[in-house]
Image (cartoon, rainbow, N blue to C red; front, side, top):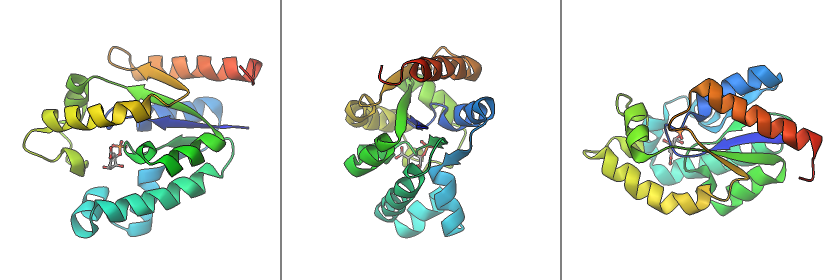
Length: 174
Ligand code: S3P
C-alpha cells in the first residue's frame, strides 16, 4: 500500500502531524532529517555549518531515495526536499504527497524560538521565510493535496488527512 508523504515549509507541522498520523494508522513514521542526523551523528545545524548545504542536500537525496522504496509508511520530508525534481519523483512513486501550508506570519511564530533550522538563523527570518516561500510555492503546489494549517490544530490537520486517506482507500483511482 502507498506511503503518505508530508511535505511543506519549515514550521508547518510535518513532524508532529506525521507522528500522530502514524499512530492512528498503525504505520511506521520516518523523518528524513532524523535519519540524516543519526547517520552523521550531529545536528542538521552542525551539518550546514561544518559541511555546507550542498553536502546536506546530497545526503537528503540518498535518504529520500531509500525511504521512498519502503511501503505503507508515513514520511516527513525536510522542507527543501521536494524542490529537487528527482526527490519529488521518488517520493511520488509510492506515495500520496500532502503539503502542509502556512502563512509567513504563522511560520515565523512557530519557528522563532528554535535555532535548529539553519536557513532561518538569520537577522531577518521573516524576510527569509517570504523569499524562500516565493521560490518554493510552485514546487509545493505539485503535491496531491495541500492543507492550509494556519487556523487548524494538529488534530484537525490529522483528521483532514484521515479523510483523504479513507477517500483514496475507497476509490484508489480517484
Ligand atoms: C530545510 C528544512 C528543514 C531541514 C533543513 C532544511 C529547508 O526541515 O531539512 O534545515 O530547506 O526547508 P523541516 O522542514 O522539517 O524543518
